[in-house]
Length: 196
Image (tube, rainbow, N blue to C red; front, side):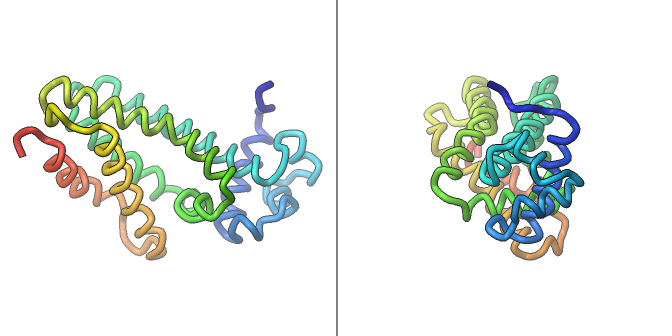
């Protein structure tokens, strides 16, 4: 059975992002999330099983929208190099526009228990599949090295993007994140390209 959706569901998700970013996951009681969302405590349980379910759902929801936006922007782009840049830029822009979400994804999701981490990895598969599609296209079109290990290349791309965002969060968003996309793009392309 699918989750119950609707305006209150969205309100609870957005409230959870704010409350968890401000208080940390372990100090974010369901009652605080309910208060921020402007709903009764009991209403939360009409949509979510518990606090862990809220955390996973917010990641699923935000990551799902995020992947769809990137796919949409890449759709009519013929250049694989430009597709990689779109991926990096949109990742940075999305989190730069939502500091609370950046704190939750870069810090709070990683401090959670093992069952949450497994579920987070499941949600990440959609994003990683998108990275794989860029790598596959790049290899097939001769832009990237023929014998490129896609699994390692995917880890390097995701790892580089993720580390830059984490560093930005740890430094309290003191500088602009989006302008770093071109430098990361250049360095990754140098490593992936056939003619580097």
